[in-house]
Amino acid sequence: MKMPEKLEKAFNDQVTMELASANAYLQMSSYLSQENFEERPHADLFLEFILDRRGVVTISEVAAPKADFTSALNAFETALAQEEAVTAAIHDLYRMASELGDLSSFPFLQDFISEQNEEEAMGDHRRASPACGRRVRASVHARQRVGRPRRVTTEAKGSGLRMVDAGYPPELLFERLRSLRFTPGEYAVFGSGPMAARGLLDEVNDKGIVRGDTWQRVKDLGTIVSKEGDAIVDLGNGLTFGRSWAYGDVDIDKLIDEAEVIGGLAFVRLSAVTDFKRIAGRPKDREHPRILEAAGLA
Image 1 (tube, rainbow, N blue to C red):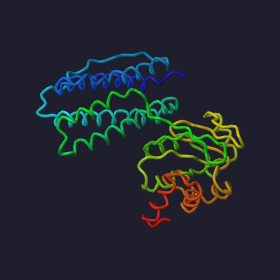
Image 2: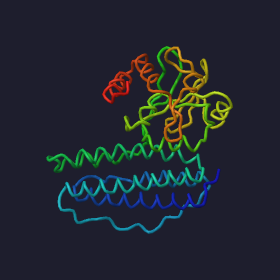
Image 3: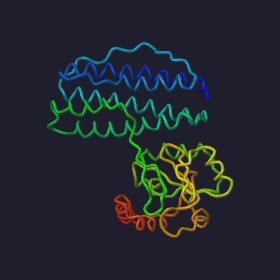
Image 4: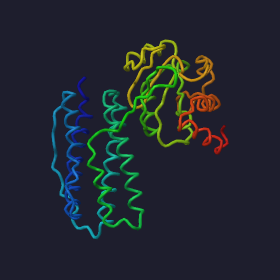
């Protein structure tokens, strides 16, 4: 499907921004007497995506990077500011894709969003260290990573159901859910989503339950990742949906009927989330009930 013209221009602007970022890291690597920390591969990925969507690549003039660093710490603060600007630009692309209904851009952009979150967190940690000095090189070097965020396929204990795990910012993930416009009363977000909707988690991958005609829509939009038992459908961006639940004796219809609406989306009640977490017993599932108890929500 061809990319909307407005979105194509925004993607081209991002290519230019990634090239500017590559130049900034090259300048920084020179100051730190370190190898080149390339950002160029990210620009290449955006460029290839534009071409894959039958768009036209148009690269604008790339401004010269800052060169007058006063210290290694100053260089790294400059790098962090660059990362924050890149993150903001990618968020804007995601919002524009959502407004234009361009679902094909979501998985591509969401991978970059997750990577930017990791890099900014790393940048804040290094900047705050009083012993930063030239150890900043190690952190800047990490920016060479070309790959997208790692997605781990796991098997739900004793069920044979394969699910995709990846951490995503809740606000953007929920925005993606709203764009799907599922029929009210035919779905609910389960897993860790109900906790994220209440501001208790910074990253989440949502597993939802569906019924009725929405199940067919889910299958049309996504990819079936398991055919053992009832199918699980991966919609990308950390979203998987099914008509059953892998843990415990769960009444799907009851969970959907009693779901709470938060921000226009349906979420399974926290009492059911707590029960599921305790049954699942994975490391994160053991931690999440403690978070709910500390918040007085268990």
